Amino acid sequence: MRFRLTRFLPGETVALAAAMFASVGASLAIGQEIPRPPEESPPAVEVPTPAPMSETVKAMLAKELGVPVERLTDETDLVADLKLDQGVVFYAVQTVIDAYGSAKPARELTRVGEIVAAALPTGAPYIKKRAFRSAAAPATSYVQSVYYVTDRKATGDPKPELAFGGERAAEGALSYGRADVNIPYSHKSGQLETPWLKLEKLRDAAKHIFILRLDGRDEATFFSDVAGTTGDGDVLVYVHGFNVRFEDALVRAAQISFDFGFKGAPIVFSWPSWGSLTAYNSDSENVFWSAKHIETFLKTLTEKTKARRVHLVAHSMGSKGLLTALRYMSYRGGTKPLFSSVILCAPDFDATLFREQVAAEVRPLAKQWVVYSSNKDIALTASQELNSAPRLGKPVTYAEGYEIIDASELEVTPWSVPEAHSYYATKQVVLDDMVKVLSGLRADARGLKALTEQGGTAWTFAAVPALPP
Image (cartoon, rainbow, N blue to C red; front, side, top):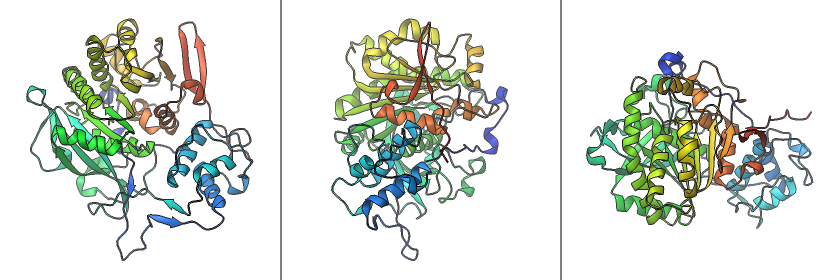
Protein backbone atom coordinates (compact mmCIF):
# COMPACT_ATOMS: atom_id res chain seq x y z
CA MET A 1 0.00 0.00 0.00
CA ARG A 2 1.39 3.41 -0.94
CA PHE A 3 0.50 6.84 0.29
CA ARG A 4 -1.25 8.91 -2.34
CA LEU A 5 -1.51 12.63 -2.89
CA THR A 6 -4.98 13.99 -2.20
CA ARG A 7 -6.69 15.77 -5.04
CA PHE A 8 -9.18 18.59 -4.50
CA LEU A 9 -11.70 20.14 -6.84
CA PRO A 10 -11.06 23.57 -8.32
CA GLY A 11 -13.65 25.14 -6.05
CA GLU A 12 -12.18 23.70 -2.88
CA THR A 13 -8.88 25.59 -2.88
CA VAL A 14 -9.87 29.11 -1.89
CA ALA A 15 -8.50 32.10 -0.05
CA LEU A 16 -8.25 31.77 3.72
CA ALA A 17 -10.61 34.64 4.42
CA ALA A 18 -13.33 33.05 2.35
CA ALA A 19 -12.79 29.45 3.38
CA MET A 20 -11.52 29.70 6.92
CA PHE A 21 -13.74 27.00 8.24
CA ALA A 22 -14.27 24.75 5.25
CA SER A 23 -15.01 21.38 6.66
CA VAL A 24 -15.61 18.48 4.42
CA GLY A 25 -17.38 16.62 7.19
CA ALA A 26 -18.98 13.54 7.29
CA SER A 27 -17.06 5.64 8.92
CA LEU A 28 -19.98 2.00 8.49
CA ALA A 29 -20.80 -1.44 7.19
CA ILE A 30 -18.03 -2.47 4.86
CA GLY A 31 -18.23 -1.33 1.24
CA GLN A 32 -19.25 -4.10 -1.09
CA GLU A 33 -18.87 -5.01 -4.71
CA ILE A 34 -21.51 -5.15 -7.43
CA PRO A 35 -21.31 -7.75 -10.21
CA ARG A 36 -20.90 -6.52 -13.79
CA PRO A 37 -23.63 -7.01 -16.39
CA PRO A 38 -23.79 -10.41 -18.11
CA GLU A 39 -22.40 -9.05 -21.37
CA GLU A 40 -19.17 -8.06 -19.62
CA SER A 41 -16.66 -10.27 -17.92
CA PRO A 42 -17.95 -10.05 -14.33
CA PRO A 43 -15.68 -9.76 -11.31
CA ALA A 44 -16.37 -13.02 -9.48
CA VAL A 45 -17.57 -12.85 -5.92
CA GLU A 46 -15.37 -15.84 -5.18
CA VAL A 47 -12.19 -16.12 -7.17
CA PRO A 48 -10.29 -19.44 -7.20
CA THR A 49 -6.66 -18.85 -6.35
CA PRO A 50 -3.92 -20.75 -8.11
CA ALA A 51 -1.73 -23.14 -6.16
CA PRO A 52 0.18 -22.86 -4.01
CA MET A 53 -2.15 -20.82 -1.81
CA SER A 54 0.61 -19.27 0.28
CA GLU A 55 2.12 -17.67 -2.82
CA THR A 56 -1.20 -16.04 -3.65
CA VAL A 57 -1.38 -14.49 -0.20
CA LYS A 58 2.18 -13.23 -0.56
CA ALA A 59 1.37 -11.72 -3.93
CA MET A 60 -1.61 -9.85 -2.50
CA LEU A 61 0.44 -8.69 0.48
CA ALA A 62 3.25 -7.49 -1.81
CA LYS A 63 0.76 -5.51 -3.89
CA GLU A 64 -0.71 -3.84 -0.79
CA LEU A 65 2.76 -2.91 0.48
CA GLY A 66 4.22 -1.95 -2.88
CA VAL A 67 7.23 -4.26 -2.60
CA PRO A 68 8.48 -7.01 -4.93
CA VAL A 69 6.93 -10.35 -4.04
CA GLU A 70 10.36 -11.94 -4.30
CA ARG A 71 11.31 -10.19 -1.07
CA LEU A 72 8.59 -11.93 0.91
CA THR A 73 9.70 -15.26 2.32
CA ASP A 74 8.03 -17.01 5.22
CA GLU A 75 10.75 -15.75 7.56
CA THR A 76 10.67 -12.12 6.37
CA ASP A 77 9.68 -9.64 9.07
CA LEU A 78 8.09 -6.68 7.29
CA VAL A 79 9.09 -4.19 10.00
CA ALA A 80 12.42 -5.54 11.23
CA ASP A 81 13.77 -6.76 7.88
CA LEU A 82 12.16 -4.47 5.28
CA LYS A 83 11.98 -1.45 7.58
CA LEU A 84 8.36 -0.77 6.65
CA ASP A 85 6.21 1.47 8.81
CA GLN A 86 4.28 -0.54 11.38
CA GLY A 87 1.07 1.33 10.59
CA VAL A 88 1.38 0.58 6.88
CA VAL A 89 1.96 -3.10 7.65
CA PHE A 90 -1.02 -3.24 10.02
CA TYR A 91 -3.38 -1.85 7.39
CA ALA A 92 -2.04 -4.15 4.64
CA VAL A 93 -2.34 -7.27 6.81
CA GLN A 94 -5.88 -6.32 7.79
CA THR A 95 -6.82 -5.92 4.11
CA VAL A 96 -5.36 -9.31 3.12
CA ILE A 97 -6.92 -11.22 6.01
CA ASP A 98 -10.28 -9.56 5.41
CA ALA A 99 -10.12 -10.52 1.72
CA TYR A 100 -9.93 -14.18 2.74
CA GLY A 101 -12.75 -13.80 5.24
CA SER A 102 -10.53 -14.97 8.08
CA ALA A 103 -10.74 -13.97 11.73
CA LYS A 104 -8.77 -10.95 12.89
CA PRO A 105 -5.57 -12.09 14.66
CA ALA A 106 -5.27 -11.49 18.40
CA ARG A 107 -2.03 -9.55 17.96
CA GLU A 108 -0.29 -7.52 15.27
CA LEU A 109 1.52 -9.71 12.76
CA THR A 110 4.66 -8.65 10.93
CA ARG A 111 6.28 -11.95 9.86
CA VAL A 112 5.10 -13.13 6.43
CA GLY A 113 4.67 -16.77 7.43
CA GLU A 114 2.37 -15.83 10.31
CA ILE A 115 0.34 -13.56 8.02
CA VAL A 116 -0.13 -16.36 5.50
CA ALA A 117 -1.22 -18.76 8.27
CA ALA A 118 -3.72 -16.21 9.60
CA ALA A 119 -5.18 -15.60 6.14
CA LEU A 120 -5.50 -19.34 5.41
CA PRO A 121 -6.39 -20.94 8.74
CA THR A 122 -8.33 -23.73 7.05
CA GLY A 123 -6.70 -23.70 3.64
CA ALA A 124 -9.77 -22.08 2.13
CA PRO A 125 -9.43 -22.13 -1.68
CA TYR A 126 -11.22 -18.87 -2.38
CA ILE A 127 -10.75 -15.17 -1.87
CA LYS A 128 -13.97 -13.75 -0.53
CA LYS A 129 -14.66 -10.46 -2.26
CA ARG A 130 -16.73 -7.72 -0.64
CA ALA A 131 -20.11 -8.27 -2.26
CA PHE A 132 -23.15 -6.15 -1.58
CA ARG A 133 -25.34 -6.77 -4.59
CA SER A 134 -27.67 -4.07 -5.78
CA ALA A 135 -29.27 -3.24 -9.09
CA ALA A 136 -29.32 0.44 -8.17
CA ALA A 137 -25.71 1.11 -9.09
CA PRO A 138 -23.82 0.26 -12.25
CA ALA A 139 -21.23 -2.47 -12.45
CA THR A 140 -18.27 -0.14 -12.02
CA SER A 141 -18.71 0.60 -8.34
CA TYR A 142 -19.30 -0.55 -4.79
CA VAL A 143 -22.21 0.41 -2.55
CA GLN A 144 -21.35 1.71 0.92
CA SER A 145 -24.31 1.84 3.28
CA VAL A 146 -24.47 4.42 6.06
CA TYR A 147 -27.21 4.92 8.63
CA TYR A 148 -28.22 8.47 9.44
CA VAL A 149 -29.90 10.36 12.27
CA THR A 150 -30.68 14.05 11.86
CA ASP A 151 -32.47 16.92 13.56
CA ARG A 152 -32.53 18.91 10.33
CA LYS A 153 -35.87 19.92 8.89
CA ALA A 154 -36.98 17.76 5.97
CA THR A 155 -37.41 19.70 2.72
CA GLY A 156 -39.71 17.30 0.92
CA ASP A 157 -37.36 17.30 -2.08
CA PRO A 158 -37.25 13.83 -3.71
CA LYS A 159 -33.54 14.14 -4.50
CA PRO A 160 -31.55 12.31 -1.79
CA GLU A 161 -28.93 15.04 -1.51
CA LEU A 162 -31.60 17.69 -0.92
CA ALA A 163 -33.85 15.75 1.46
CA PHE A 164 -32.77 17.80 4.49
CA GLY A 165 -31.67 21.43 4.63
CA GLY A 166 -30.07 23.74 7.17
CA GLU A 167 -33.16 24.58 9.23
CA ARG A 168 -33.90 23.01 12.60
CA ALA A 169 -36.58 20.32 12.82
CA ALA A 170 -39.62 21.36 14.85
CA GLU A 171 -39.16 20.50 18.53
CA GLY A 172 -35.86 18.83 17.65
CA ALA A 173 -37.63 15.81 16.15
CA LEU A 174 -35.17 13.20 14.90
CA SER A 175 -35.40 11.59 11.47
CA TYR A 176 -33.84 8.17 10.87
CA GLY A 177 -32.82 6.21 7.81
CA ARG A 178 -30.16 4.55 5.69
CA ALA A 179 -28.25 5.92 2.72
CA ASP A 180 -26.57 3.91 -0.03
CA VAL A 181 -23.55 5.66 -1.48
CA ASN A 182 -21.77 4.89 -4.75
CA ILE A 183 -18.03 4.23 -4.36
CA PRO A 184 -16.18 3.76 -7.70
CA TYR A 185 -13.82 0.84 -8.21
CA SER A 186 -11.16 3.46 -8.93
CA HIS A 187 -11.55 5.11 -5.50
CA LYS A 188 -8.28 6.07 -3.83
CA SER A 189 -8.13 5.96 -0.05
CA GLY A 190 -8.38 9.41 1.48
CA GLN A 191 -10.03 11.01 -1.55
CA LEU A 192 -13.52 12.31 -2.26
CA GLU A 193 -13.96 11.81 -5.97
CA THR A 194 -16.71 14.26 -6.92
CA PRO A 195 -17.56 15.82 -10.28
CA TRP A 196 -16.56 19.37 -11.09
CA LEU A 197 -18.50 21.75 -8.83
CA LYS A 198 -20.43 18.64 -7.69
CA LEU A 199 -22.71 19.00 -10.71
CA GLU A 200 -25.23 16.16 -10.89
CA LYS A 201 -25.09 16.02 -14.69
CA LEU A 202 -21.37 15.27 -14.55
CA ARG A 203 -21.66 12.29 -12.21
CA ASP A 204 -20.02 9.11 -13.38
CA ALA A 205 -20.49 5.96 -11.29
CA ALA A 206 -17.11 4.71 -12.49
CA LYS A 207 -15.37 7.84 -11.19
CA HIS A 208 -17.37 9.57 -8.47
CA ILE A 209 -18.78 9.17 -4.95
CA PHE A 210 -22.42 10.18 -4.63
CA ILE A 211 -25.66 9.20 -2.89
CA LEU A 212 -27.72 6.60 -4.70
CA ARG A 213 -30.81 6.63 -2.49
CA LEU A 214 -32.21 7.29 0.97
CA ASP A 215 -34.50 4.92 2.83
CA GLY A 216 -36.28 6.53 5.79
CA ARG A 217 -37.15 4.52 8.89
CA ASP A 218 -39.09 5.01 12.07
CA GLU A 219 -37.12 4.91 15.32
CA ALA A 220 -37.96 1.31 16.25
CA THR A 221 -37.09 -0.04 12.79
CA PHE A 222 -33.90 1.99 12.69
CA PHE A 223 -32.50 0.58 15.92
CA SER A 224 -33.65 -2.90 15.00
CA ASP A 225 -31.79 -2.63 11.69
CA VAL A 226 -28.65 -1.30 13.38
CA ALA A 227 -28.75 -4.16 15.87
CA GLY A 228 -29.23 -6.62 13.01
CA THR A 229 -26.24 -5.17 11.13
CA THR A 230 -23.87 -5.26 14.07
CA GLY A 231 -25.04 -8.28 16.06
CA ASP A 232 -22.48 -8.18 18.84
CA GLY A 233 -20.07 -6.20 16.64
CA ASP A 234 -19.17 -2.52 16.45
CA VAL A 235 -21.01 0.74 15.86
CA LEU A 236 -19.34 3.95 14.74
CA VAL A 237 -21.11 7.29 15.20
CA TYR A 238 -19.79 10.24 13.18
CA VAL A 239 -20.64 13.90 13.94
CA HIS A 240 -19.61 16.30 11.18
CA GLY A 241 -18.34 19.85 11.43
CA PHE A 242 -19.13 23.37 10.20
CA ASN A 243 -20.16 24.19 6.63
CA VAL A 244 -21.46 20.70 5.86
CA ARG A 245 -24.64 19.97 3.97
CA PHE A 246 -26.60 16.79 4.62
CA GLU A 247 -25.26 15.30 1.37
CA ASP A 248 -21.66 16.11 2.34
CA ALA A 249 -22.07 14.46 5.73
CA LEU A 250 -23.25 11.18 4.19
CA VAL A 251 -20.59 11.15 1.48
CA ARG A 252 -17.74 11.82 3.92
CA ALA A 253 -19.03 9.15 6.30
CA ALA A 254 -19.23 6.66 3.44
CA GLN A 255 -15.68 7.48 2.33
CA ILE A 256 -14.04 7.05 5.72
CA SER A 257 -16.12 3.96 6.49
CA PHE A 258 -15.03 2.40 3.22
CA ASP A 259 -11.40 3.41 3.75
CA PHE A 260 -11.49 2.03 7.30
CA GLY A 261 -12.87 -1.29 6.08
CA PHE A 262 -15.31 -0.95 8.97
CA LYS A 263 -17.44 -4.07 9.41
CA GLY A 264 -20.03 -2.79 11.84
CA ALA A 265 -22.76 -0.18 11.47
CA PRO A 266 -21.66 3.34 10.53
CA ILE A 267 -24.05 6.06 11.68
CA VAL A 268 -23.95 9.78 10.87
CA PHE A 269 -25.54 12.26 13.23
CA SER A 270 -26.17 15.26 10.97
CA TRP A 271 -27.03 18.48 12.78
CA PRO A 272 -28.45 21.51 10.91
CA SER A 273 -25.39 23.14 9.38
CA TRP A 274 -26.25 25.59 6.62
CA GLY A 275 -23.33 24.47 4.46
CA SER A 276 -22.21 28.04 3.97
CA LEU A 277 -18.89 29.74 4.71
CA THR A 278 -20.72 32.81 5.99
CA ALA A 279 -22.86 30.89 8.52
CA TYR A 280 -20.23 30.17 11.18
CA ASN A 281 -22.12 31.86 14.02
CA SER A 282 -25.41 30.27 13.00
CA ASP A 283 -23.83 26.83 12.76
CA SER A 284 -22.22 27.30 16.17
CA GLU A 285 -25.62 28.00 17.70
CA ASN A 286 -27.22 25.08 15.87
CA VAL A 287 -24.67 22.49 16.97
CA PHE A 288 -25.13 23.60 20.59
CA TRP A 289 -28.91 23.28 20.12
CA SER A 290 -28.34 19.76 18.75
CA ALA A 291 -26.28 18.60 21.75
CA LYS A 292 -29.37 17.50 23.68
CA HIS A 293 -30.56 15.48 20.69
CA ILE A 294 -27.14 13.86 20.32
CA GLU A 295 -27.32 12.89 23.99
CA THR A 296 -30.78 11.39 23.53
CA PHE A 297 -29.67 9.42 20.49
CA LEU A 298 -26.52 8.05 22.16
CA LYS A 299 -28.49 7.01 25.25
CA THR A 300 -31.03 5.16 23.10
CA LEU A 301 -28.29 3.59 20.98
CA THR A 302 -26.51 2.10 23.99
CA GLU A 303 -29.80 0.81 25.40
CA LYS A 304 -31.33 -0.70 22.25
CA THR A 305 -28.33 -2.34 20.59
CA LYS A 306 -26.01 -5.06 21.84
CA ALA A 307 -22.98 -3.71 20.06
CA ARG A 308 -19.73 -5.03 21.48
CA ARG A 309 -18.11 -1.63 21.01
CA VAL A 310 -19.45 1.84 20.23
CA HIS A 311 -17.00 4.38 18.80
CA LEU A 312 -17.64 8.13 18.53
CA VAL A 313 -15.85 10.33 15.98
CA ALA A 314 -16.38 14.09 15.72
CA HIS A 315 -14.78 16.60 13.39
CA SER A 316 -14.22 20.31 13.93
CA MET A 317 -17.37 22.05 15.23
CA GLY A 318 -19.01 18.65 15.62
CA SER A 319 -16.79 18.22 18.69
CA LYS A 320 -18.74 21.01 20.37
CA GLY A 321 -21.99 19.11 19.94
CA LEU A 322 -20.53 15.76 20.98
CA LEU A 323 -18.62 17.04 24.02
CA THR A 324 -21.64 19.01 25.21
CA ALA A 325 -23.83 15.91 24.82
CA LEU A 326 -21.34 13.81 26.79
CA ARG A 327 -21.19 16.52 29.43
CA TYR A 328 -24.96 16.28 29.81
CA MET A 329 -24.63 12.51 30.20
CA SER A 330 -22.01 12.94 32.91
CA TYR A 331 -24.30 15.35 34.78
CA ARG A 332 -27.01 12.69 34.76
CA GLY A 333 -24.82 10.23 36.59
CA GLY A 334 -22.64 8.84 33.82
CA THR A 335 -19.68 7.37 35.71
CA LYS A 336 -18.93 4.18 33.76
CA PRO A 337 -17.58 3.70 30.23
CA LEU A 338 -20.39 3.51 27.69
CA PHE A 339 -18.11 3.90 24.65
CA SER A 340 -14.96 2.10 23.55
CA SER A 341 -13.37 5.17 22.03
CA VAL A 342 -14.01 8.84 21.39
CA ILE A 343 -11.95 10.44 18.61
CA LEU A 344 -11.90 14.23 18.24
CA CYS A 345 -10.50 15.32 14.87
CA ALA A 346 -9.30 18.92 14.53
CA PRO A 347 -11.78 19.91 17.27
CA ASP A 348 -13.08 23.49 17.08
CA PHE A 349 -13.65 23.68 20.83
CA ASP A 350 -12.39 26.05 23.54
CA ALA A 351 -9.10 24.50 24.65
CA THR A 352 -9.06 26.16 28.07
CA LEU A 353 -12.63 25.12 28.83
CA PHE A 354 -11.77 21.57 27.82
CA ARG A 355 -8.60 21.34 29.91
CA GLU A 356 -9.99 23.00 33.05
CA GLN A 357 -13.55 21.60 33.13
CA VAL A 358 -14.80 19.31 30.40
CA ALA A 359 -11.96 16.77 30.17
CA ALA A 360 -12.36 15.47 33.71
CA GLU A 361 -16.17 15.47 33.50
CA VAL A 362 -16.52 13.36 30.36
CA ARG A 363 -13.42 11.14 30.62
CA PRO A 364 -15.19 8.29 32.56
CA LEU A 365 -17.66 7.79 29.69
CA ALA A 366 -15.11 6.21 27.31
CA LYS A 367 -12.30 3.70 27.63
CA GLN A 368 -10.06 5.58 25.20
CA TRP A 369 -9.87 9.22 24.16
CA VAL A 370 -7.87 10.47 21.17
CA VAL A 371 -7.46 14.08 20.02
CA TYR A 372 -5.86 14.94 16.65
CA SER A 373 -4.41 18.43 16.40
CA SER A 374 -2.20 20.32 13.94
CA ASN A 375 -0.36 23.60 14.02
CA LYS A 376 -0.97 23.89 10.26
CA ASP A 377 -4.75 23.98 10.65
CA ILE A 378 -5.48 27.41 9.21
CA ALA A 379 -9.23 27.00 9.72
CA LEU A 380 -8.69 26.76 13.48
CA THR A 381 -6.32 29.72 13.33
CA ALA A 382 -9.21 31.79 12.01
CA SER A 383 -11.58 30.28 14.59
CA GLN A 384 -9.20 31.22 17.37
CA GLU A 385 -9.19 34.82 16.19
CA LEU A 386 -12.96 34.90 15.84
CA ASN A 387 -13.66 33.30 19.24
CA SER A 388 -10.77 35.00 21.09
CA ALA A 389 -9.93 31.64 22.65
CA PRO A 390 -7.42 28.89 21.82
CA ARG A 391 -8.86 25.84 20.06
CA LEU A 392 -8.47 22.23 21.20
CA GLY A 393 -7.31 21.21 17.72
CA LYS A 394 -4.48 23.78 17.59
CA PRO A 395 -1.95 23.81 19.11
CA VAL A 396 -1.42 20.82 21.45
CA THR A 397 -3.58 20.88 24.60
CA TYR A 398 -2.58 18.36 27.27
CA ALA A 399 -5.20 16.65 29.43
CA GLU A 400 -4.85 13.68 31.76
CA GLY A 401 -6.17 10.44 30.28
CA TYR A 402 -6.24 11.73 26.70
CA GLU A 403 -4.01 10.65 23.80
CA ILE A 404 -2.97 13.85 22.06
CA ILE A 405 -1.78 13.24 18.49
CA ASP A 406 0.18 16.13 16.98
CA ALA A 407 -0.21 15.91 13.19
CA SER A 408 1.70 19.13 12.52
CA GLU A 409 4.47 17.31 10.66
CA LEU A 410 2.10 16.02 7.97
CA GLU A 411 2.59 17.65 4.59
CA VAL A 412 -0.44 19.69 3.56
CA THR A 413 -0.96 22.25 0.82
CA PRO A 414 -0.56 25.59 2.68
CA TRP A 415 -3.40 27.36 0.87
CA SER A 416 -5.85 24.44 0.94
CA VAL A 417 -8.16 24.72 3.93
CA PRO A 418 -9.89 21.39 3.18
CA GLU A 419 -6.57 19.55 3.27
CA ALA A 420 -5.21 21.38 6.34
CA HIS A 421 -8.44 20.97 8.32
CA SER A 422 -9.68 17.58 7.07
CA TYR A 423 -6.39 15.69 7.27
CA TYR A 424 -8.10 13.07 9.44
CA ALA A 425 -9.97 11.80 6.36
CA THR A 426 -7.47 12.57 3.60
CA LYS A 427 -4.09 11.50 4.98
CA GLN A 428 -3.49 7.76 4.86
CA VAL A 429 -1.27 7.72 7.93
CA VAL A 430 -4.08 9.28 10.00
CA LEU A 431 -6.69 6.90 8.58
CA ASP A 432 -4.39 4.01 9.47
CA ASP A 433 -3.95 5.29 13.01
CA MET A 434 -7.69 5.67 13.48
CA VAL A 435 -8.21 2.06 12.36
CA LYS A 436 -5.81 1.00 15.10
CA VAL A 437 -7.72 3.09 17.64
CA LEU A 438 -10.95 1.35 16.63
CA SER A 439 -9.21 -1.99 17.21
CA GLY A 440 -8.34 -0.92 20.76
CA LEU A 441 -4.62 -0.19 20.40
CA ARG A 442 -3.12 2.49 22.64
CA ALA A 443 -0.77 5.19 21.38
CA ASP A 444 2.35 3.35 22.56
CA ALA A 445 1.35 0.31 20.45
CA ARG A 446 0.52 2.16 17.22
CA GLY A 447 4.01 2.96 15.97
CA LEU A 448 3.85 6.61 17.10
CA LYS A 449 6.67 8.70 18.51
CA ALA A 450 6.27 10.13 22.03
CA LEU A 451 7.21 13.77 22.67
CA THR A 452 7.24 14.58 26.38
CA GLU A 453 7.33 18.19 27.48
CA GLN A 454 6.70 19.93 30.77
CA GLY A 455 2.96 20.03 30.19
CA GLY A 456 2.56 16.39 29.21
CA THR A 457 3.11 13.89 26.39
CA ALA A 458 1.96 14.19 22.81
CA TRP A 459 2.43 11.65 20.02
CA THR A 460 3.59 12.24 16.46
CA PHE A 461 3.59 10.12 13.34
CA ALA A 462 6.94 8.43 12.78
CA ALA A 463 8.43 9.16 9.38
CA VAL A 464 7.66 6.48 6.80
CA PRO A 465 11.03 5.11 5.62
CA ALA A 466 11.87 4.69 1.96
CA LEU A 467 11.66 1.14 0.68
CA PRO A 468 15.08 -0.56 0.73
CA PRO A 469 16.65 -1.25 -2.67
